[in-house]
Image (cartoon, rainbow, N blue to C red; front, side, top):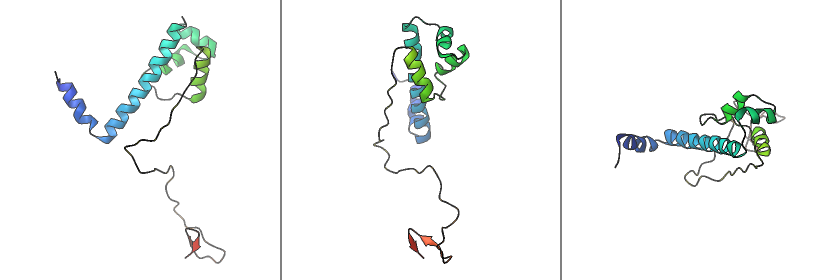
Length: 125
């Protein structure tokens, strides 16, 4: 049975921006659930884990929150080490996207040679 919510979600997921944000939220949820599960399997409270990591219980609560996306690799490694686990991160190409994005925009100035003439792609103009 398809509910109104399912129809609404299907429609929203057709929008690229929403779909990407939805996927990222799922990834954050996965991290939070894994950390909380490992902590519980180790028989530790958030306060116990915080003591092991020399941080606050609030910080542990934050990293176990599905909405938190500020995990640093170093903190994930510390948490994993304290819980007798390891961190594995996979970065794979997105088959749906073919364009490569550049982190920086083009420079607002043009390089000039010794003679003051602009240089374009390694050649003088």
